[in-house]
Length: 397
Image (cartoon, rainbow, N blue to C red; front, top):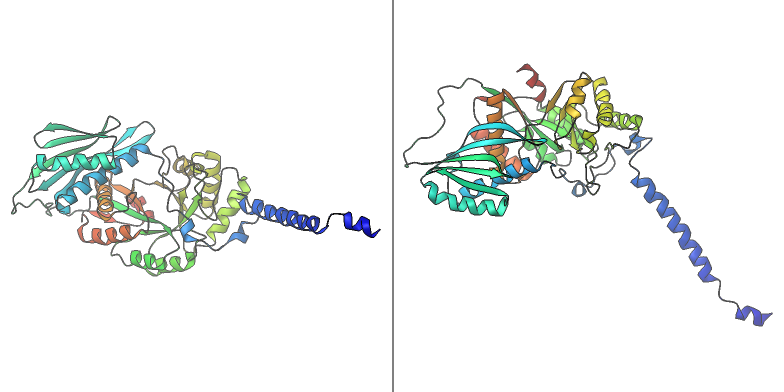
């Protein structure tokens, strides 16, 4: 008997293996539960802790032409800045919205006033284009005029104007009648109290788009209300890329209609004083008419308006919201795809030009440090003929 026990293998490895298997099954169960995109009780997720570093500001804009134009903008500005051309000497003379396939982009005419000739400036511009927008082509039209194309489509016309030190090329202030109305929306608010104070302290109103399940959603909404800033909910929506996470409280196309509505209702409770909503990411979700209809119908119950951030050229969010009887708007310009002060200032001037040409314009930015600095600088140099107004006020113009 004792010999047979001695010949049996020890039993402790089996016990250890059983424990490991049980722990593995429990861990797998929780992992599957946490990765589920739908939820039957979205309220339970309210004010869940948010790791700000894990939430990207935006997905990559799925608009190659618009992205290319902004890279060209940046290359030109960077080259002129390196050549010591004054920022005030770069005039956006005209802007025109054009189409390329499913996309729209802004064709721009720039006049560059400086002490340099076109020949002296064109080499650094060409070099910068190769570095920042290598699909762009620069063509000489005359002694002082050049064309820039992207994918064989004309995007920029550059006119070089050599000036003397005493030349005054500032805008003629004789006519100061309001010629256009511009709204600036700042997305992705909810994780920085200091950014909210910086925006609230500007002399012109900006619309606060607040993540509903961010760490300081209520506190930042209170700051906005104290300074009479308009508040909208920055609603996370599913992007095209599965590798990009829109954050807590997001809606996805494979959710049931009731789950979409329940998530939206729960988010509405988290941002006091909100009067509308726009999409955070959402390049996939906003292409799905049935999905955005559920968002629109829930917004309609609250009397909200809708802003389509246009993160995809084929978004149907704006059209579906209008079809359901909501007040709806569409973004014209993202001001800070390139996180650089001069680039952001140029996009703000582009938004001014659109407002002057069309009567109204909507620009969207984010609380990047460079954007906050650009907004403060623009405060000093913005076109007085463009009135900055709340988003809801655009209906009056």
